[in-house]
Image 1 (cartoon, rainbow, N blue to C red):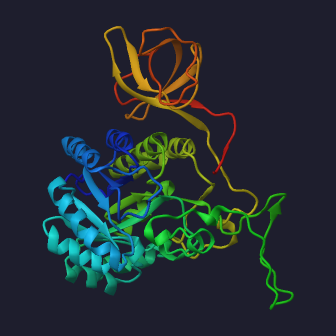
Image 2: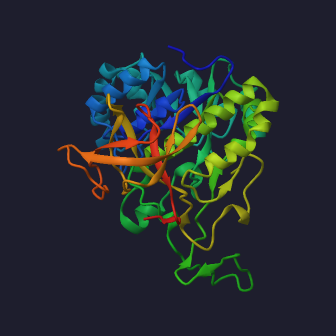
Length: 419
């Protein structure tokens, strides 16, 4: 199955759960990447059981969307037999590709499920075309570029590898202080190994830096009353540079965020979907809609924006020194599961709101509908004025009738602190 729109790069979106996978599919992804309960580098994400993975793959394939499963830990000896069993399970579930970084894991996957494509993770530090050629000769279909590459370097790779080989590159989301994600801070401070899927994100913590051996040489460190955050990078955002990404020869545009909410995934997927489609319709249309892309992408949670390494090495302006908060302009309320004959929308409530509130219906087609909550009732059929309990199943009558998979959100009063 090749679902990628002709001539266009694939839009690859993360999913932390079955609900988020379905959201990514409906809001414009060409492919979704997910993690199972083992061997992926997001152990703190919800991740998928085998049953959820099978259901997610069925749902995605029904919508002509691919699913890739991460198995990108740097494996130790004790991991190998478990990996063999895990790949045998995946052979039955039939994802479209496995994302792997470790050569040992690669060999096991080739042996156990040779019919499944293998994509080489950014964790393998893929920085030159000889590395790409090496993995191609081993049987890999695609390699994810290291985040430390410029667009010029990616174009050079494209010009020096087989035409059928695919390049995947991150274009949006959190950046890492360490080289392609190979971080030791988490293991050092907490005993949780980032390369085994247990990163505690110490790059977001506060630090005081002292260099005793170089008197007179100071880092440009700024701090507030809680400390300083010299490792806290701005988030990558390339929404304004779709033409340059296409010109570099990238086959798959990858969104970071396998621990993000459905609201984040819907917002990012929908915005990049429209930007890509607009550009391939005409560059003039893409340029004319730039204000809409900027406005919509800013409705996702983010820590200011940067273009990363794509146009040269980052400098002091790509770090955030004075805080570890992220901008959060909208609060996620829920996803419409169904709408009954009376027009009541069934959903699982994620955050509190009240009857009488004005909220927003976020639709996959790019429209946003401001509407009023006329009434609500719970599963027992009792009228409720508010919904203070997270994950409560509710039925809401809205002034504008939504459709299944529409997302409900409301504007936030202030940014939230990263926990």
